[in-house]
Image (cartoon, rainbow, N blue to C red; front, side):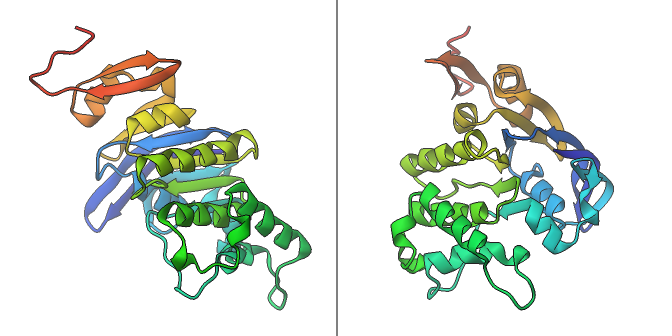
Length: 262
């Protein structure tokens, strides 16, 4: 569904993406992982057109994504940045309604179908009874689910998420990623999410793209790609990778520690 080929992008004279090539399969959750500054967030911004690319192509269903206008892009792709803000006075229901702007006519407002989407989105994230409540009064976990509801109400097939569990404690990290996983399994969405934790990646992602210095070092299904060799090459640290109750576990160890696999 989403393909990038030899994409280069820079901040001034400093290149961040260096010929990045990757494909993201439809209906799956793909995690973008890698050390800080490797280009994960920059890639999402480049897909959205917020960051100009110097070379390469990005296509959506085979067509150049740059050829889409902003409203057309918003109908196809939803984007959740690392940090999202809204005015203190805005109620949760009003926030979610903003997601439909790309479908409104110039003089019109939400249609009956739009309002159904808004209600469904709040129900999916478990906040249907809080639509009247100011976003500023929600807990951290509720706010993150509110932003996911807004993304859902946009009704785009492709969802880009930049660190969707940033600043959340472990309980809410798992709750939010379980919800994100449901978007692919039950709602047929394609999700590309920047994640930092390899154990969360192994627990929830279908596929993983591992970046280093703006390039793809490894990509594929999680079980084939999150390996000891790849983790050491991409992150510069050693870790044991093993299965526990059907799930991969990444256990780093220091230079003085002894690996369980040795």
